[in-house]
Image (cartoon, rainbow, N blue to C red; front, side, top):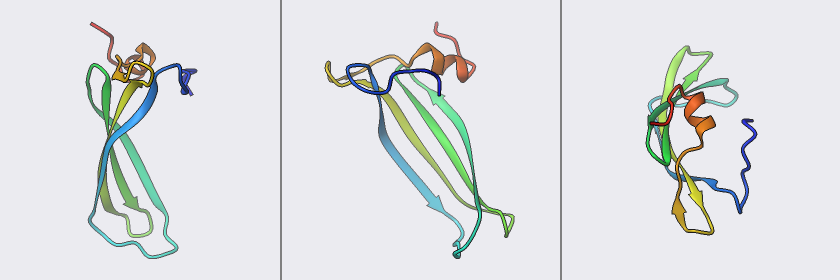
Length: 94
């Protein structure tokens, strides 16, 4: 971890939305590799992208994304991304 608190009263990470588009079926058992990359960074949110690869077939079987928001539960509003997150993504605050 990054040493960030993850429970109230500190801001928490909220899953705003998520989707996955499957392009190939999987049979059990199967080994799936999930590659994660960070997309757009906003003031209080970041988007992640996922690629699912069926190892035995050496083929992509799905792609997806999720948007995460840093949220202050007490104030009931989004808050800026922690500097540690921006730094890990290679982006400094302006």
